[in-house]
Image 1 (cartoon, helix red, strand yellow):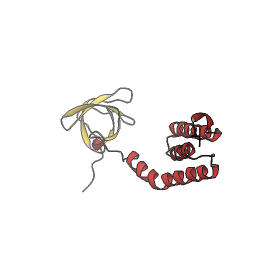
Image 2 (cartoon, rainbow, N blue to C red):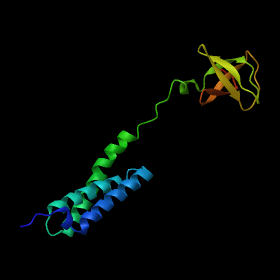
Image 3 (tube, helix red, strand yellow):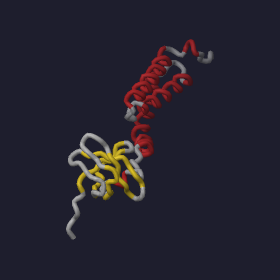
Length: 156
């Protein structure tokens, strides 16, 4: 009995290679973890093509479907959970909502400076100008610039 070489594996061998490459390309473009599992299934079908004689297309398709389904149902949630880690706020994000003191006047056209927790930051405003000594509340952070608005003292 003649063993199967690359030359006589049949056109299914090349079909599974094409399916694998297309699935990987689609996954790279979309990055939503859907087509990657079909690449795994097509690799399994490709391996079965190498070891099965007479190109049993039904068995290869069954292996492709089974391995792809198994990967989607069981592996995708595990991988997705590892990839979709929650956003961890930075120390700077924790300053939103805090009160700071203006150390350099802030106008609508030019940034100024505020001091919070002993650190001076560049600050801008979208509504009112502020004078040195005014109290402001931090509402947004963009890069290393804080956006502030008038501090409204809460009645207790």
